[in-house]
Image (cartoon, rainbow, N blue to C red; front, top):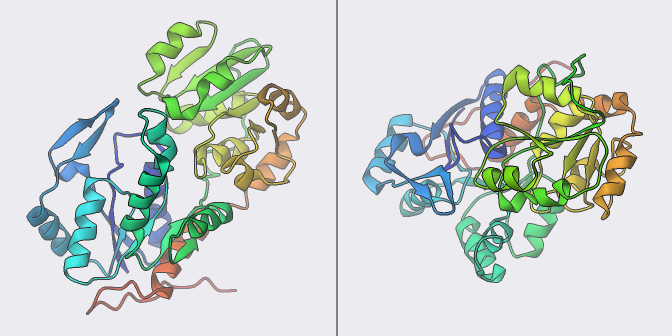
Amino acid sequence: MRILVATDAWHPQVNGVVRTLTKLADAAEALGGEFTFLTPQSFRTFAMPSYRDVRLAMPRPARIARLIEEARPDSIHIATEGPIGLMVRRYCRQRRLPFTTSFHTRFPEYVRARVPVPGALIWRALRRFHSPSRAVMAATPALARELTERGFDNVVLWPRGVDTGLFHPRAVDLCLPAPVFLSVGRVAVEKNLEAFLDLDLPGTKVIVGDGPARASLEEAYPDAIFLGEKHGEELADIYAAADVFVFPSKTDTFGLVLLEALASGLPVAAFPVKGPRDVIGDAPVGALDHDLRSACFAALGVSRQDCVEFAANYTWEASARVFIDSILAVGAVLPGRTGAEPPRRAA
């Protein structure tokens, strides 16, 4: 089954959307899925206002059509609501082709953190964007319920996974005063990092990631350690060396970094909001508290082995299987294409 994924988020961006799509494609190969990506790399781009590290594409309809037709997909999935997503949606609508979409980002909260735009207007635009989709894929049951309550149709659950071959406990020493409280992710206003950096905590606060707020936060919090972007084994070592993973965001729809931390044996401290609440629930792998400082201290007492065992339930193979099965279940296969069902493992 050949699936074309249209996404405005792509390398060299470092975020959950890019990691999700990359891991999805890798895992789908074993299930008979072949992914092609339609990304900003195929177009001229410009810097996103207020976030110059993110480049937005300037796609033209004719080039979009040519790239899709050259890919000869069995199915089309639109992962983002940006310029590429809009153009691919237009292509499908004009030709009455079925497609699926996914909901990754709480744009109303992200936009409100930057400019005073009413959230209702943004939600209305998002509903309109996703309304023709055969299936709107959401990462958690709570997000799926919220989208349904907000008037989105055809919402289905698409869980995420974690690479336990990369993220696992290991003996690493960062040579920093303990305990080490770690946060990983984009360093931007919507991540609410000040809520973490303002805490009176012992030991060391470590921030991994980059973004438009990094320079100002480094200046405002000289006692914190800002390591910039880290990848692969180097990132996995940092997870394993820390004592608590602090997730101050209140806007994330899921938070892949939560699973990466747990797989590394790192308990989580977070606010009891959608995202961390949906991932952790009542499992004894972290502490969710409106008092983030209390959550940090409570997480220090959590069993690291419990975290590892919890994360083992999330695999990218299972995520890819749900993704492909959802496309088949809603009939989002293009006319004239078979979209053969992927092979099943023997029981």
